[in-house]
Length: 88
Image 1: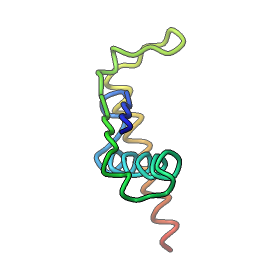
Image 2 (image 1 turned 90 degrees about the vertical axis):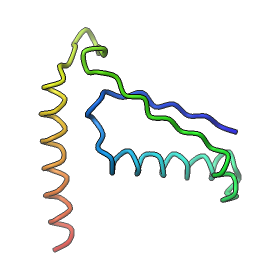
Image 3 (image 1 turned 120 degrees about the vertical axis):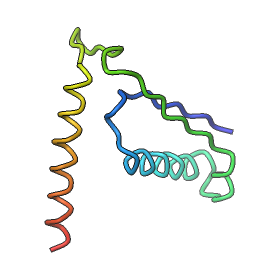
Image 4 (image 1 turned 120 degrees about the horizontal axis):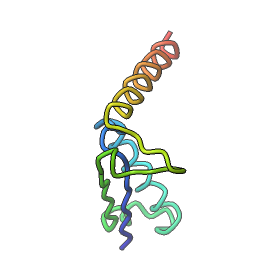
């Protein structure tokens, strides 16, 4: 029974992105660890743990909640535009 924990900055992933991430990780585990048996998915536990931006650091840089919000908004706008272009 695999248990996967994902740690991320609060606000980086919206609800749809979390759902897609959960599905793709479960599918990968079914394929790799479960030998392709779809019943294996019933034994997979996946947890997305979110922490405030100020609790994170990368190379000494510490993001703020405001920076994360700005990043996520710009990304979502870009992704929405790309989705609209693919639909036409």
